[in-house]
Image 1: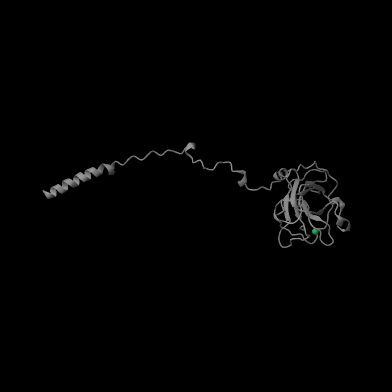
Image 2: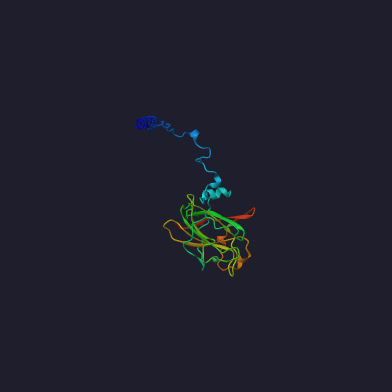
Length: 228
Ligand code: FE
């Protein structure tokens, strides 16, 4: 009798638990997320401008600095000059040599690279190097050294500082230029109204930039004319 009761109770318990095991609760049908179900903090396609990476595209640099280049004027081929003792090859590609905290007056140098027929030369290589405001070159690294390529309109843009004088030399910026598959031209740029221009044996007045003084910085204009 006792054994029969145990079997009976076991059967009842089994019967009670079976439905739950064999008929589970139907799981909710998955619902694809909709636009309205996305969290409000989800990232959007448009990043805030503050998070956009800086760009060195010439178009942006000209516009950002309110520079409209006058139409190209050709005054004959740019005179060649010695490269001097301080050229370093393999410079970084950059338009901006100026660094925050750098001594000296900020200077932007702009212009066209032109062929002898006064036509713009796009994609011309320009390599600039210069002394700092104290007349000292960085001959170990690449401070105040950098190359760039003229844009589709033949324009170049350089942001730097006014170079200082050093013994025997007036203020100047060195440059090498080369049209695509052309020869390398080497020259220098000078500044107007510098007393040391008259005592510098290398100085050439044909290489003086047109200097525009702005609030806290200068813009220098110079067009290079080279054989392609
Ligand atoms: Fe020099």
